[in-house]
Image 1: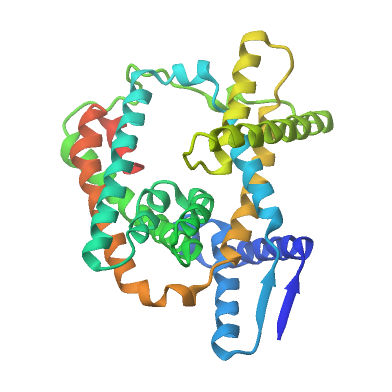
Image 2: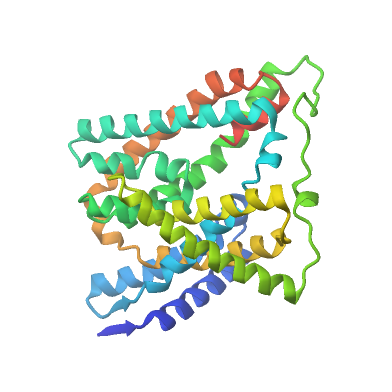
Length: 342
């Protein structure tokens, strides 16, 4: 039996998956402790049901994921609206240092992933799908880059990347706390802990606090759609360079351009709270749709190599954080907190 769903039924099913995930998360304490996102919880449950249908050959679900790209682009466009240069400047030198460290870490993760994949005799793209894309970028980035990896020839790219992102989420929750505690207790034990260094404390809530209103939502939706449209134009221009960019890049650049031009001219009001809400809702639906696409049977043969590659990534991240991130960021309390989340 084949259940064929058009794009509207598929999106409605994604909402049901979100509601189901929320209910499961409310009742399972460990999911709350590890901060597993609701779309991941509901998506995994749905994926298991589809897997049962596949294994028993009783039913399959054919879904139309057309609206997935729309919600993906809306989410990443909303991120661009937070890229205000005046706010970024307030982060000081620490922001620049952390960006450089992140770039180095991403490069190291991908290099290690490719080398490890070749050593295990699997497609090097598996190394990328278990590298920085899921382990640093998370589920959102994995869902965006999976189609790129699929175009390059990686079978089951969606499933591999999103499964790796789930592993990264859990391992990060398990590892971040102990690493932070170790650094604070062993390295900062006999020092005066100061939570206000030379970096200015930024109250992002105050920066983006707006009175929520119907008009604010209307203007935010209009601005969002305009930025998304401009983003598609930018993406087409970037595509002519011969380099491969996810569609999300254009949306982020367009919204960042709008917000920074407006910072200089102040021609209109940008409702950051409403934009943030639109972004959050679109992210939930986008992730739910992405998780629903998982076909676990496609990665059965890769389970062993994937686990080896993922554990290798965890070790690399822990070593990099303790011996490099912590020292570069100042070897103090704030550096310990930053390292635990890196």
